[in-house]
Image: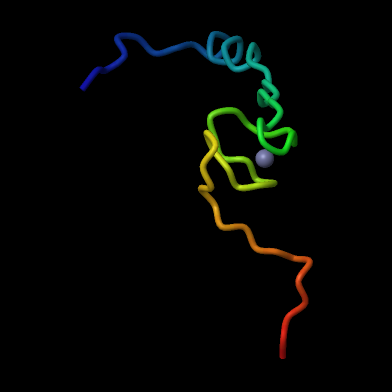
Length: 66
Ligand SMILES: [Zn+2]
């Protein structure tokens, strides 16, 4: 297991902690429905990935029969 040779000083720790920023997620339009979504993952609007139905989406429009 790797062990650090020297203790990192307070200022070095703070300098490293200060120079990172939040990167916004890369959004791309879905090829089937056109909604924006995260790349390399199934579309949340139509549930398709690479032209296949991957997620069974719940249909909110249909009223419940009770
Ligand atoms: Zn889609």
